[in-house]
Image (tube, rainbow, N blue to C red; front, side, top):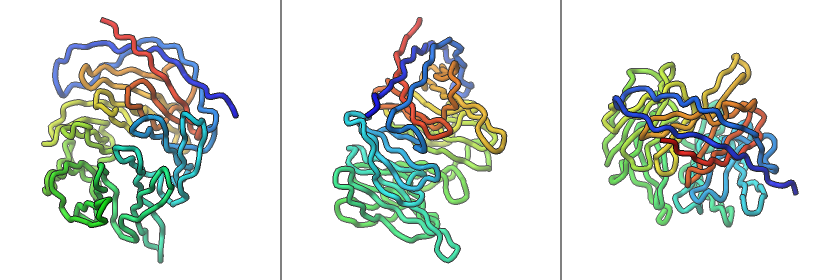
Amino acid sequence: MKNRLYLFLMIGIISLFMNSCVEKTTVSTSKTKIDNKMISTLDKDFYKAKFSPASDKIIVTSPDDKGLFIYDFKEDATGRLNSKSGAGIKPLFTPDGKLVVFQSNEFKNRRRITSIYYQNLNTLVLKPVVENKRNLKLLDTDAKNVYYLEGDNVYAYNFDSGEIMENPPNVILAYTDNNLNLVVYKNGVKKILNPQGKGNYIWVSISPGKNQILYNKAGKGTFIADLSGKTVMDLGRLHAAVWSKDGKYIVGMNDFDDGQKYTKSDILMINTKTKSKSNLTENSDVIALYPDIDKNNNKVIYQNEEGRIYLMELKKNHKK
């Protein structure tokens, strides 16, 4: 068994005065020493790594989003969870980390059919939430329910009872609808926001505090808005951005391509209070893609274009 290798990195988080809640973030240009190392058992064809809630495991998928694998840090071992087509598009952990929820896509009679499943990570038992539907999209999950979009309607599937409720109350969701509008759903009421005007909204997620929305507007960049659609932060050019578990940071990738392959990509980390932005891989030759951040904001996981998974351990050096 190969030894696990870790990447140690000093990053500077520089406190900045906030002039306006809609200003672009200021880029930190602090120099950092980088020596990229990969997780030994995830050395090729593993993609879109995502930390479990306890950050003791990660899930990854294959190059074409087919199936899910799980890596256990303690055991330094990787196992297959399933081989469902499309499972890697947007897998979600329940808050207790016991279940993973995902959607699966296939074509029947030349029509795309979608199903949603959840899987117990201890027993590997796979159960359906809803199967063989058109215009189906997984939205979110909590301790009790899976939330999904079917057509224009939001539904909640209860893990315990198996019952499905249309327009569930007492939940706040943010998502793109089937026309790529940015939508907020709050206590049974849907509202199209589209803060930067009409167009395609992608990589949408609601903050851990359920009071802000992170999203990318095609051709415009990545933003944070409140639930009314008011822009509170312009993050600039950033793709596949995600919240930290406490909402204090955003991590994403600043990637470039020539139309066929990636030519360069760095992982950026943004402090949502100070608006400072740090390039975590600025001195690295690795094309760094699809990051996620652990529960303590101490580790960032990402991949290169060949599907090698890297773990970056952060040592925060707070300077006055």
